[in-house]
Image 1: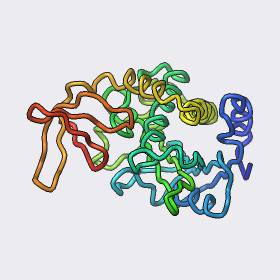
Image 2 (image 1 turned 90 degrees about the horizontal axis):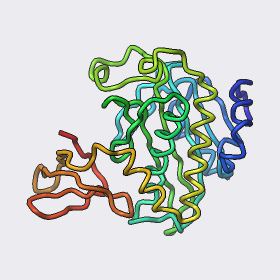
Image 3 (image 1 turned 30 degrees about the vertical axis):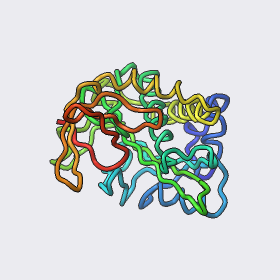
Amino acid sequence: MQDVPLDVARALAGVAGRAHGLGAHVHWLRSASSTNDVAARLAESGAEEGTTVVADTQTAGRGQHGRAWFSPPGAGLYVSLIVRPGAGMLHENNPASLLTLGSGVAIAEAVRAATGLPAQIKWPNDVLVGGRKLAGILAESAVQGGVLQFVVIGFGVNLQPAAYPPELASRVTSIEAETGRPVDRALMLAEIIASMGERYADLRAGRFDAILSAWRQLASSLPGAHVEWDSPAGVVRGRAEDIDSHGALLVRVAGKVQRVVAGEVRWL
């Protein structure tokens, strides 16, 4: 491990048996433009599966659809993991789809286990508490010649209240804001890494139903939710019903079920 704080190294060692190799090699940075970018460069240079990049702050962190991820120093966990699941994880030309769902399940489960907070999931990549965003996930894949080379799973978790930009202040929360007590960063990171290792092991073993079942239980507000998205023909509105076996969102529109794989879905 490179420059990893002692408490973090000890916490990760304590969950190594559950993490299935994730977090075994950690690069700890004071600052990074984006941990996903650092991890991708390491992966391209041959870094092994489980290599983890953590930064105290990000200067150009990003989420889905190119949005900036607000990453104030010391206020959150900003982490990227390298996994190399192989071509068997290619689903609907989106190798990151089930990894994103599985990672959301893992983070929500870890938050529940470590804090008791009733974390929920919002399709496809947000973890919420009380309807406000606590964590987000961005999985980015590298495919060459039709073969999946690696996936970088990036996630940010808000640990402490921060001076969020006005457009975010009412829509985000943090673990400390919700619990009213300090959060142990090392233990929270270790619990998330361990939970992600367990869910990644499910995916590698083909236990997709276990992931999908857990996801549905943690996304209890999804069935019947009003959603909309932009299509070439204009805005489409409908009611969310479920996800399918590949993690696509199923929405009933004018009596028919449409499958939403990518693009921005707005929850009304």
